[in-house]
Length: 209
Image (cartoon, rainbow, N blue to C red; front, side, top):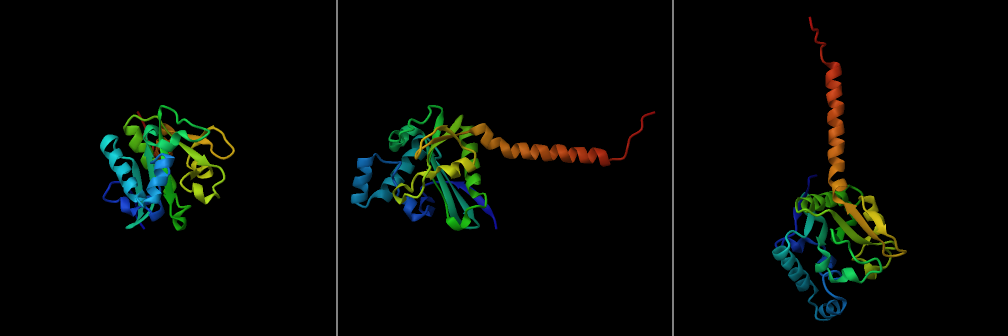
């Protein structure tokens, strides 16, 4: 079973789960969100937001596939492009950080490392663009269906985020990008050192006269 991560574009936006394609919790101010919902235009508004981000800022999301099946996604953007980012008690997002907004993996594919794979893909993209950190508001009590667009705080902690402003319900968490992209490199380097040690100890001794 192959797994791959690709950038979100207008061509593959339809591969997001239906509830996520129509979720504009982050992308619109509350009163505009209500209007879009009333007129059934949330998917159009989502597409318009992604289009604007791609044109003015660049890549703003990643999709992960298992074979040919889309099984998860992540969206991210500068906080000034996310109207809802100022509405939380732990606002604002730090000025050196990009905000992670939408994040979802199909329930039957959770627990297999896909969430971490998406975080790694975002970290590599943003590091190349000179961004220092990713921040997100977490939901410490993710049992409220009305707030399903907020990422569970426990999940963020599991993939390396640290709490920078605690709150009983809406903590703000941060991931330093260097730590996000180097954990795998550190493991690989340790294995190389180990293998190098093994190769030295098993080689035939060289005698000097």
